[in-house]
Image (cartoon, rainbow, N blue to C red):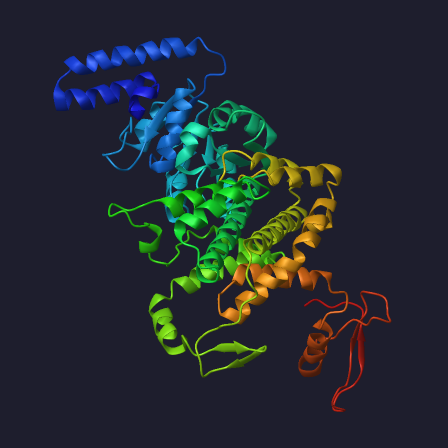
Length: 525
């Protein structure tokens, strides 16, 4: 059924739609269509909590979301710039006129300029009491700006991070909302129509900006998960020598255990998929990864919060490196077949490498799982630091719980995160939880073997190795950062703290004899 047959219109929307179709094809067929619409209006208005909503942007996500909302019995007026879409009105003016005040308008267009211009146009058309929900992948910093610009006009604003992909229309979407509790409750029937069944898939993450921040971190973790899976795939293919069908069996087995997740599931399906000629389609896909910005924003936000989001950032860098395709071709020709590992020593006069740890599939699984734990630990650490910085008071356990359904990173593992934060809402790092501690300790030997295998055999494992370095750095009580501080003080008089003094007191040494000794009570890097 087409979207416009599912949607329920106001009188003006029906009028304009009917007029356009009568001009094209005469009014006989349209009269029948209007009768159907009117029937739906009468039926739906008998139900409780029926809402009226405008959806701007009827692409793959917006169009499917509009259909799901309409199928739940709500009135939906759809607008898209493309005349080829299933839009029910031809302009924003028409759309606003078709809604009864106070209006709710959901914006589902590309982040950045498209969202900005749409919201600016709406600001001139809407009235005090109306509400705009930005459901695209906007940057969280844009949300505060939009809210501040709309507030003097009396227009309410909410942000909503949406995950679920093309399956959301049937399975529901994971929704991370930012805004006031009052606005959230006002729009709840719409959110309830979009979310999966059950108690997962919907959370008021925090005030304005909190929803998109949670979605940004969700996507950052997604970057990490995907990169880790690709590295496991590379090991099984390039070091274990498994073909696609054999690897599909491995991923199926992994999906039946503690790695049970959507991404592991679809990896097995991808490995089995055949092109028209019967050959694996995966082998024909160019190894140049794209991105839409949320992973990069996660890395930038982590730096702003002084939070070491190393694995997720490395996953972003891995995509950037994959995009250097011409350079990779040149480097492969220049350096392939020139390294050999013998007795732990590297030489440049023979084929790459005969060295082998007798790589086991179980070691790969454990390394993948351990690194995955690090990815989530880093993601939730960033959520915590941002929450403290902005005063959002995010509920980390609930965020993990709603990610169990409807989103791309859904997995059974997320329940363990919910349980960790239920036990200790103030948990500084998930690695301090008993479950994480036990699993990391169990997987650590295999994890180290796999990272060493990658380094010695020339198989790039940027995410797995970055995760291990983060873990080792975090657990190291006496690191080498004292040397960095000494160097900074030597060339720039940046000062340092001392182990034999209280924290918060800073010192400078006259390292060369050309300056004086200083002591500072405060210092900011």
